[in-house]
Image (cartoon, rainbow, N blue to C red; front, side, top):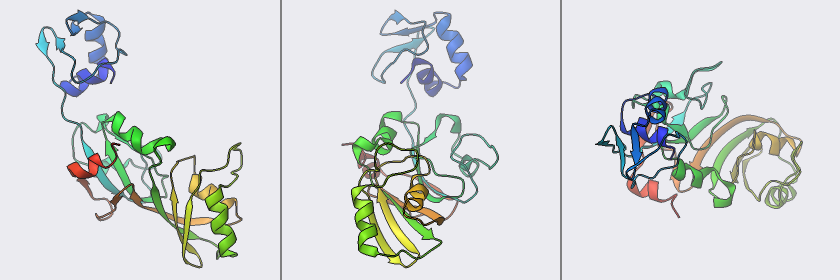
Amino acid sequence: MRLDKFICKSTELTKTQAVELIVEGRVKVNSDTVTLESTQVHENNDITLDGKELVARPFRYLLMNKPADTICSNIDEVYPSLFNYINEGNNAELHIAGRLDADTTGLVLITDDGRWSYNIITPAKKCEKVYRVGLRKPIIETESVIEQFALGLQLQGEVELTRPAQLDIVAPQEALLTITEGKFHQVKRMFSAIGNKVISLHREKIGEISLDVGVGEWRYLSEDEVKSFIK
């Protein structure tokens, strides 16, 4: 992680304060003075501030059931931030591993471990996300539509097809969709590509983790759940 972030994670200093101390030459990494705040460091490095060894706080891994009309942001904007529901402290250090739109509900994973969240959000890792989709019109030509999703859809404004996706139709106007990427408004655009409109969207599962808390509630992930994304 960046040196300024490491200092914030091992002290109560703000990012601005951490940068000032680094520029002043008061921080050493493995006995060498470092004055560039963007320097990449590792938890195993020997990092000191004014000669005092710094130890980063343990990473945090949370699961939350996102309510409607909240945003996956650390600050309130047009809609309130989902972090208003989390009384964890140091929320500014946390980020969402795979954001949802304001009107989309369900499972979000929250962490301050960037390397861990990379395994969830990068398409190359093929981490599956399962969405329950409510549709304006019934799905017709079932076999053909399922095959279209499996082969990839052409989204408006995109050059490449979507990655293979699994569509399970559970009712005429309801489906479960499993995808391994997260393009802008992807689920809504995929159904738009077949002439339908998403009227409700709820994420039920990420990887091996299913949603198991009430709306607006959160919990810590177990050690096994955290490890399930590290391959």
